[in-house]
Length: 376
Image (cartoon, rainbow, N blue to C red; front, side, top):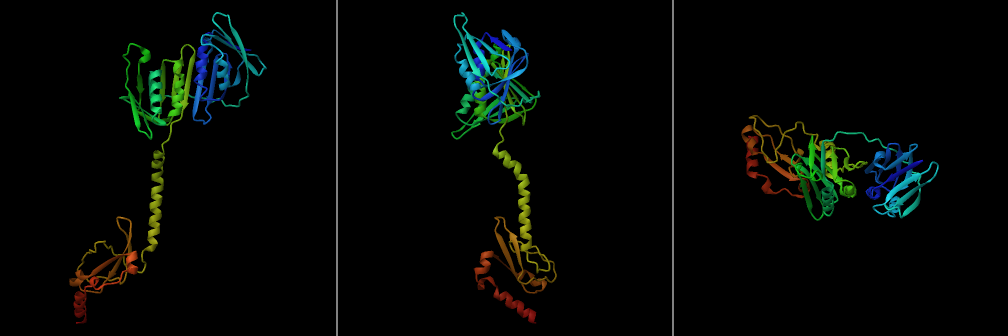
């Protein structure tokens, strides 16, 4: 036998309204300690955890621990039949597949009984461990709801940044961007209007704004909201229900595409460079007996001795703009005093095949002098 009686019936209506847009079907767990729920959204991105303690009800009885599977949407429809000041009673007998909702007016002149079928829902109960968070923000729930509503008109995501200066909510969309900063304010005369920030480490996390906005539908349950954040952990948005329990929302942070690209760059870039180097090496001409460093400008070093000649040698190099260039060296054996008379001719791959050799590119007078000295 299970039975609970809640004098403030509007509280249960507000609880279901805060869940129905996030969860379709869920199991309500009934035990001697209270009435609870834990469920994930259809995308498995967000989780909601509800706890209503037994001592918060006017009457609470649960002979054994069991679960009642219910459609949240259908439950919300049932509760619409109750007035905000009605007393709500929920009853379920052992071995039955239905649950009964009874609504009583305060004057006892009107009583309504509504029966709803239960569902067989296969779900796992997740153990949520207690964690120490790097930053905890407590602020008025109405202010938090107003911020989320305003930012949702600009962008689809919200970045929550907690620092010594305060907590900043930022968004960016096609039409522009927006930033709202709330500074700590604990000296207010009304505690429910205070903004308190406890920070061990600065935190910056980004979340889907549509989920955060859905969480704010629990604003009517509490005057304050607590936001707990840690790097690479789900955010916890908690609304305490006075003398009853709490409702907590968990949401995983978003990973931006830019962060993914940054993480991939150290892995892909060296491999690409390695492939380019391996591809370039086989194209170096192998007939040259000695590798001589050649500059694009055509300068060389003098060693005061007879130079070693590589006839018609070609060396593939890469210029600053990435174009492949061939250096064609046309030289003859000369004495050291005539070494500066060598001519370096630089042509691109396309020019080497199509451009004819002109007289301007070969200094005839200097070659003739060289040949006379060699013959003598």
